[in-house]
Length: 243
Image (cartoon, rainbow, N blue to C red; front, side):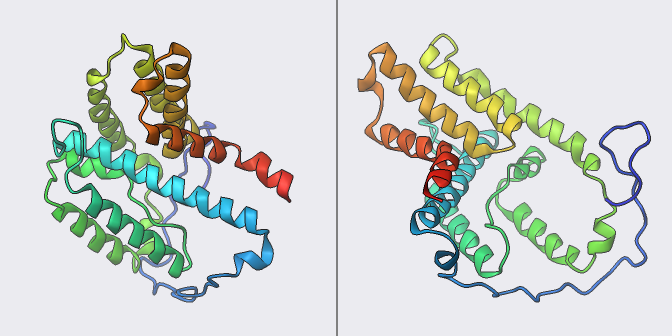
């Protein structure tokens, strides 16, 4: 929302009514991209790290969102696997590529989808309706801009509460499980990044099991993913070194 800052000093905005409630959306940047243009501006290593960062962020954001919402909706099997996960990842990957082709940021799934599940959404119809409403708001952008972020706070608090009910299934007596779970839970909101939380969970799980002498319990893929996340966390020093 736009308007004057709250005089009490809180990070709140006083909404200001727009001059018009509707406007024609601009599609001037649609398709305005260069597939290989990045290699002309940065080194090959930096470009690979950039793509790798987007891959990790997109994939694990989606996995985290999918797992959390799937558990909340009761759409997982007895092993905790989300039904139709391959189709969800396919749609998300196509959407991410479409975002780049549309000259906008990479599209991905959002944890706010849990608000629909909290109201009983299960079949996907709620997502279709949400998409149609978003399409409508492209023509009502001035009016939508009046709505402050604080208006969504109560719904997000309820969603967070519903998601926290899932921690009852964590084995808190096993440090190799409890500490990675704890780091994952607290780092997501503190860093504003789902991938950072998941990455900390992967890395800490592998490290703890290593020091416990229980490496046989670590799936080989976990070692690979933990290594990739270490590269992800070290990308800033690597970029500085390769610049």
